[in-house]
Image (tube, rainbow, N blue to C red):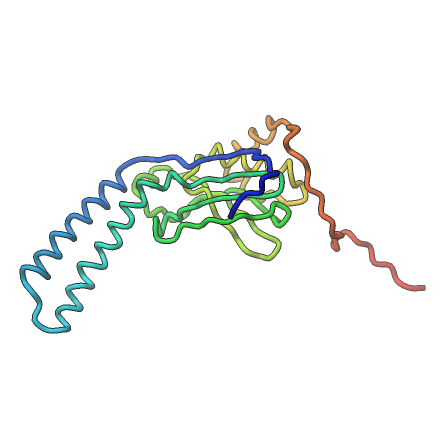
Length: 217
């Protein structure tokens, strides 16, 4: 998606590299699979169609998996979260499918119903496994959709995003489990100073939950 020309960028946060172990391992496994392809397919030469299919499944498919991860792990620092007055733009590479399905989209801030940060429960990454409290940004939209991003962004910067959303759109609710799991977020929220750039968003529609229904007399 393309950012509108009149939109002012409030905050742009880029992802960071947490290590090289994942890249080295996936590169190593890719080399192993290349050698295996030579031994199994080129050198041994399967005779039947069934043997050919099994040989390709056990060699070429793993090679595609490991090589794709190794290639994309060089570039996951392209992930980012960008906030303007009205929108949140992001590119995110899920940990479980690194490089297989990067997500890139834009979300109107007024569409956020609930937000917070949550611990990444599954880490298909040795580099990040040691970061037991590594968080990701979770947005619950009014449509009911859960949006997750920021897997490769530092926790402190994710807290800054939470503070900005709170100031821009106070109607959205901050998840209570977030403050319980990450008490350091409270300190960020306390010291977050209002800025002239941060203009509150007001909804045009009426909040039905706050409307009082009176009986006809």
